[in-house]
Length: 255
Image (spheres, rainbow, N blue to C red):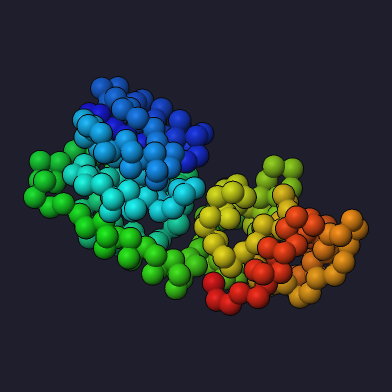
C-alpha cells in the first residue's frame, strides 16, 4: 500500500507518516507534499499511490484545487482541523476523514474503511468539486466550533462566542464573551486558519475576535493599544508593521 501525504505542517506530516507505518508496516510513504503547487506538479508525473491523506487548507490554498487541476483517481482521506466542516459531504461521497489532532485509532479506522471499499472505488469516484463547494459555503456561513478540555470532558465552543485566544507559557487558552476560559489543544497558527477573517493575530500572544474590539489608541513606538470588551491579563498591542492591516480588518463585515 503506497501512500502520499499532503500536509503543510511538517511535524503533523511526520507524525501521520509514523502512525501509518506503525499501524501498517507494509505501507510505503511515497511522498510528503506541502503545498497545492507542489502537489499539482507531483501528480502531473507518474505516481503509483494507492491512497492519499490530504489536509484541506494548505498555505497556498485549499487542497481541492489539486484535484480540480489534475485528474486523480486515487481515493483520499481528508485530514481536517475544521471540526464539522463538510464532513457529511465526505461521508456521502465515500471518502473518510480524520479530525486533527488525529490518533492511532482514527487513522486506523480510516484506513480500514479504505481497504474495505477499494475494489469498488473506481466505479464510485468522488466529486471533489462538490466537496469544495460544500466546504467553502459551510465555512463562510458557519464559523464552526473549537473543541476544549474542561475537567474530564471535551466540549465544543462556538467560534462566534469566543472573544480571544491567549498564549501563555506555551499553553493556549480561549475566553468567551461571557467570561468563561478553557484550554485549547491547538497552536495559534492552527487557530488562525480555523477562525478565518473573523479573528486577527494582533501579536504573538493574542488572536482576537473583531466583535470583541471596543477601540484602539496610540501606544509606544507608533504601536496601537487595543481595548476589548472582555478583560485581558495583558495589554493587547499591534506592532507598527501591522497597524494598516489591522485597521483594514476592522472595517470588514461578516465572518
